[in-house]
Every structure is written in C-alpha cells, then in structure tokens.
Length: 430
Image 1: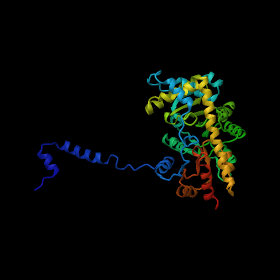
Image 2: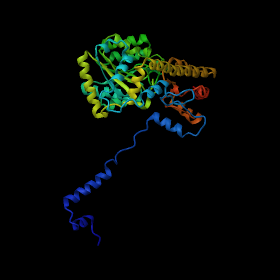
Image 3: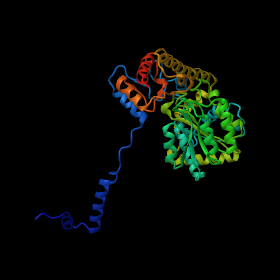
Image 4: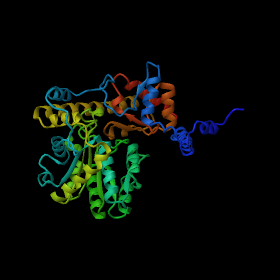
C-alpha cells in the first residue's frame, strides 16, 4: 500500500509544525501572483507596435509623441551633441543631492519664470529636479495629497491620459473641467469659465501652459488673462504642466506667456517642466518641479518636503540629462544654438500643418480644416472618429490613436500628400 505524504514525512521524523509550514509555503508560492491579470496596453505604445509589425512600404506612423525630421528620423540636436562633448571625461558620476542639480534648477527657473524674475531673486521658489514632466507632476500630486489631503484636482477634458494615472495613483480625487469644443475643434471658453466659476473656492486646477496635449488648442493671451482673473476671484491654485516650452511657437518666452500672466496677477503657482520635447532628451528624463511660495522660509520648508517625497521613490535624480541641460542653458553660445534649433523644429511642424491643410483643400474636401493651422504644437486633434481612424489603418496603413490625434512630427514632405488623400477618402462621405 502506498504511503501518504504525511505518513512519509512522519516516518522520516519531520516535526508536524514544520510539515504544516512546508505545505502552506508550497500553496503560497504557487499562488502569490496567480490573481494578477495582464495590464491593458498603453494606447500610444500599442499604435507603435502595430506600425512596426506592418510590412507595408506605404505605412505612416503619426501616433508617436516624439519629434522626427523631414525624413521621419529621430533627431539629436547639435547643441546636445556639443554639450555631451564638453561633459565627456570631465565630470564624475557621484550622486546628485535629493533635490537634484542646483545649476539645472537655476537655469530651469529662469526659463519658466523669466531671466530677471523677482521671485528667483527673493528665493521664493521651491524647486527640485524631477524625472521629466511625468515625475514633476507625480511629485506635486503626492505633495498635494500629503499636505492638503482633502483637496482634489480639476483636469481638462480631454488631457494627456497619463495625467489621470498620476493623480489617481497619488490618491488625489479628480474632477474634470470643460476645455475642448468638438464642433468648432477649438476651445470651449464659455464652458471652461463656467466650470472655473462653479468649482469650490480654493480648488486645484491642472493647466497646460502651451501646446495642449492632445488637442493643440490654447487660449489666446486675452483669454488667459480672463482665466487668471477668475482664478483670483475664486482663489484657485493653478498647476501648469509645461512640456513644450519653445517647441510650440519656436519662442520659449512666448510659450511661457500664460505662466507670466498668472505671476503678474499675483498667483502662487506650481509648474512642471520637461526637456523631452524642446531639447529632444526623451530618454534622459530631465525635468523640474517648482512651487512659488509666500517667502524664502516657506520655500525652504516646501523644498525639504519635496525631497522627502522623492527619497523613497528614486532617492535622487539622474545626472547626465541634468548636465546636458545646465551646460546648454548656462552657456550663451550653446543656448543661442538651442534657440535656433528649437525654432527649427517648431517651424517644421507649423509648415507641415499648412501643407496638410492645403493638400486637403486641393482635394476638394467639403469639410473645414482650418483647425489644423489654428492648433499649435506637436499634435493636431483632427476631429476624425474612431471608425475613420480604423479605416486609415486598415486601408491605408496609417497609424494614430483612435481619438483622431495626429502627431504632426510624423508628417513629412514625403508623406503629407498620401496622408491628406487618405484622410479625404475616409471623411468625404460625412
């Protein structure tokens, strides 16, 4: 007769307690993560995967949120190459402080708040180096949760999808406010102002400083002034995500206008900066989080708390991207080259907007495509439906997110006519 496992263990002299522990361990090891389901695919990364798997020679990817030259190739700016040449072999690889590179932070604040900002001189800004714009937003969201636990965040409809993930994972309750007007493919300014007025006094609002993602729709300067005034009336806190300074219009000063208006009006603000788009440092994760405070003493306290939040997350930020940014912005010659190159990137995208619109109009499209050139920045919110986007992919091998967002960085002189013809084909029946 075959012996049971228990009998075998007993015969071997293994104590009962140890036998039970082994059985529990065996069950636990087999089931620790058995309940974990695969995560939903990121919609943008999924587009790229599908594009790469398509063997068609005509395929076009206008889904990726990264700049490409007119040949469709990734770009490393010459100012970045020169900065790397200067850095190579001359710097050590020691840890940065928890708050990051002091030099990079100083240069970032001048870019956002102004070269001669009184707030910088008065040391009223708490600022830390962050893991690009995403990291800056996450640090602020955790700071908001820790020190204003009963607050919530108002996020525009639509917005960059990761904004929702960031404040959700920081456990900050979210509300939305009106932003985009689908019929005009522009700004729903009346709806936006109503939502600002109707939000509880002292609410947090997430604002895109320029080149709104995904719509490319920005308020005018006069509209920003009205928004700022209403924020003042309601005592709202504006948190600016500035991922495209310089990349939107080609002029970093112009792209910071919304922030400067709020500063002129006496607001305290928060600001997330990223060097992914405007310097092409996508993989370096170089960014900055800043919060304007009442005075220097408050700024010191706030910065210390931001550092404490960063410590268990990633301890301290990476050094290489910070060195590139501080080298470029801290050297007049390199900064001048950067300003020329970032304007070149912006101008190419603006030119592709005009070319796409002109090609659609030449095809006799019955639709208005004025919004293509009215919008600004990397993305064009085309107004196409998910079904029309599916047709573009299935019939023409053109890849983009199903909300109709076109990455203008993927449009080139070589594919703009093909793209326009395909868009015309899928929209002309409407």
